Image (tube, rainbow over all chains, first blue to last red; front, side, top):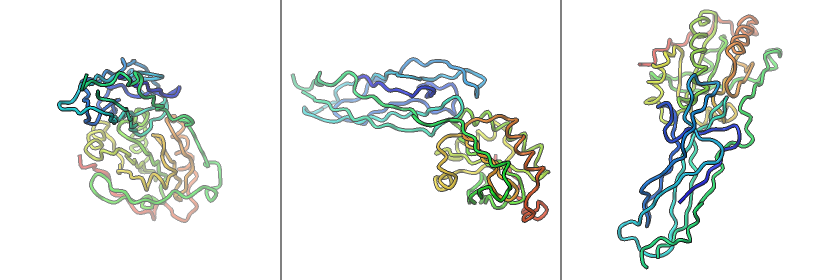
Length: 112
Length: 197
């Protein structure tokens, strides 16, 4: 399952592997349900240089995809259900940063 | 077949728009040229520093103050903080002080090591939503207020500003003196920062 996210032009978010321990990583998590997330595949980070940092930073920008591989949970019952995911990110421009934010994702699934 | 996830699940399940669409991330508002009485009063606050002592902005009446809202995860803030440390060192005996307000949700466990790492020599407090609201919401970091000796806001910088820009504004305010209502000699002397590090 692939999520496509878009940052407005002029903004970037830290990648899932930020360059500095103080920076907040991009992170997608899923609540337990009839399927469980086995692997989350993040976009390949870009190393970009900004005026506020002496070193390039590991970031994502523009539109990017995050893919989750799911597996059936043991004993999952058949029928419709809704998975809930949370995408946490922290964005900056080249001059300012914004508080970390979490976007909730609702995904309908049908176990047959 | 039972227990198989339906193929009806869309491949692209969601699209999230993550940016701050209309936010100009470098705004400067200055009232430094105005008569001091034409400037807005900086709201007073009561915040705890790293040693658990309560800091009021009003404790610094009579001094020129740089009030910096920042966070450990903010790269532009990290660039400015050494400038403020230098200003504190060079100007503290001339009626000047820097106050930092950290907006980190994780509090002192992340802020303390950061202050130690950057050798911050000025007082830092943990911010809260109430204080941020009093100062207009603080949507972007860094947001820095330059406050005159009478406790009025002479300039506001949202986003990274220039070191010289700060220094010029501070020196102008130091040179201009206050209204006389609160001379430096009668101002309370804030407790020297130790950060408890």
